[in-house]
Length: 533
Image (cartoon, rainbow, N blue to C red; front, side):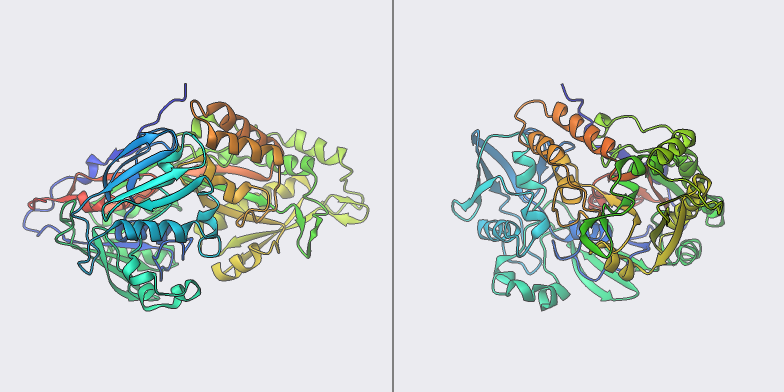
């Protein structure tokens, strides 16, 4: 039977110490982050930061329950409960206390509208592909929604609760789909969560304020502020001088940890992340994706490039003890992460043999392997704003140089990076992807023809195994394990490591819990020293 990992909620007792005597308990939490967020409307932004903020503004029928499989995949949120009518039907009863931030009750009309929008590939392509097994979403009165599925399978409740954040139909239904991103609603969204939209300064900060009458309980923290700066040093300075209360991703570099005593109230909190860092190999020619890549289409070359990297040493150099090895797209923190195969061993000798067996030799003595007059030279795209990925790029460049592979590191601003990655205008790209808590969600990155499959990897065998895992009615472990093994053995990427999420934050907060799939989602339940909830 599949090992159940539970909710992976971590109680950070180190963060619940009393504040310094004489200081008022803080009611505003300022978080310094390295991304700029301008839109938190569900499906309109793919960035991890935007999704995490969105979870405080827009609720789902149910919140993730620690597994994507079975009838314990969710706990109540907008729905106060649900019943299973038969093997293909779930009925959800909405909590009558739920309100939109403009005071309008949340009704079944909102749920039906939101699901219809999410199931439309023209409006939400990445979400629609994950909802293909939902046959119908119908209202039974104002406070009950019935979701019917095409077939029995184990991830029904997860599909009905996780993928779709509910939108207010009375405000959004009249907006043409192609105008939503530029609409007044997008600029000042109205949700049903514990925090409401307050203010945005596009290059500086985004601010939410609490909903005092939030139906699940009034938040003790009254304001949530995210300050934007791509500079790691600037974020650290904000933290140490009191301009921010929390710094996300305090490392790398690990030397930052030694500076925390400059602000004595700070503590370190860390939790396993749902992210995996990897080198994505483009299997199609950058100039013409209809043709195979002249170097990376060869699986033996991709394998050699992977086993020629000392990934364990790399992870320790960049993240210290706050990273674990990865062998596949499955993050170790996911409930299915334990099903991944062991990482392939670092073996530069075997890597050299593999390259030689494929005809790559240094025929002119310049230190770079070549074949038929073509050097084994690759461009390595990296977002210049990411300290960790820039560090990794330089280590990869040096380790590949020792194999006779020339890697040109190409740092790009994030907009340029994305503009080249999407059409496949690269050889290798350093990626950091945060997965959803279901293996089925990985289809978006690794499925044949999927929207975000930027490396153009395609294995019909792998796709069928992932589908079998999604549709499993009892134990999904065998097809998940087989899918992870198939992907790992195809080497569509050099999977490097899964870094922890490491935060620096002050004392003074109690009941501090983190959910690995959305760290700030339960911040409304935190308590403050000297102030009850």
